[in-house]
Image: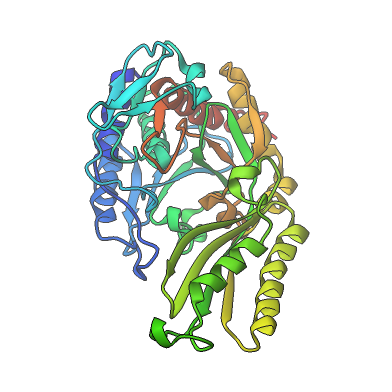
Length: 414
């Protein structure tokens, strides 16, 4: 199908463009630099022969591959995001190509002694003998989700170049700001015009997901009172001590590093503070809606209890829902998951049907009327210096896209 060299060249051309998003920005896209890749993608889609290529004022990209069959076929879509996480720098990405990986430690950065080791990241051993793309240890890679974009563009190019593969109308969509939870906010589902879609935004080869967390973000502000330390007796209120009390009052083992599978968590991901004021930034996650609501109530109850203890309002907690479990919207149309599963099986890929311990654009899009399961894009260790992607996984994901299109176009499709 597609050669390693071709997929590597395309992927590297994407990840070397900095597209880090910014949660503190109110614009769409949240960073001006996202336009650099967005405009490149729009031109590339035109160059490979896609039709109706459009990029709107918010950098959302849509394009169409027309049907090449003369019977009715559902219109399907494939979606990925081009921003990268603000958790770790995406500037000056310098990918390293590791050919025929030998299963041993990979030195990412000799000067800083940064090593990608299978002793710690056991998944590496799945890819012994394959070609890996890694970072140089100083940035993230951007496979989340530029691998997905690479696979979608490569699949469309392949289908255009091989008209003997029959398919219906296919829509592709690329979004900004997914990493800060806004990727679907301005996505025009009606304009996109698909009956259903797939996000190419999963991790290891074989992943197929139609369940995800219910998600909320919480901002907890603690008000203190600064007084000269020499005269502070019975006057100073140190907001950082109260913040510590709040943190330690939440279930210590219900955090990301102690949970797996369907277990939810509270995740403190940022603290800003001094004596006068401390702000805690949490994310709240749970697959079960009742448990999700209970977690939010725990934070509200703790806020009230501490305010009562201190005799006044010292803590102010604001909780906002971010997205919900797509399972409710996908289960009524489970054939769209079955098709993806069958496509993988026909390509000798073992489907790994599991719940996402996170969210994708697809979770929000499913609630906007576009059912949207998630398919592997191949990368591992997202959002950090140890991120890597096997080239063979990207090629397999590209084949899955083509196979799904082929299966949906069968005349006996139901």
